[in-house]
Image (cartoon, rainbow, N blue to C red):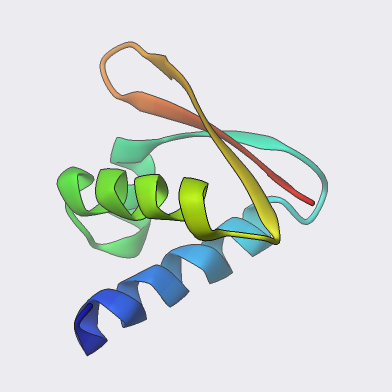
Length: 75
């Protein structure tokens, strides 16, 4: 993993922690990508990685309709 990828991963985790401060949330990849100035492909890969690795967040691919929707909540 490159330093740039790790920075993007940390950026996404911080974003998800802010968004889940009040409880679970549902997020579309395209809007997360816009908010973080990343591509939807990057966001999809980062979310997929978090599903496997995150011990502080529950990340679930929820639906696909014009963009992938993710359900995220803190553990």
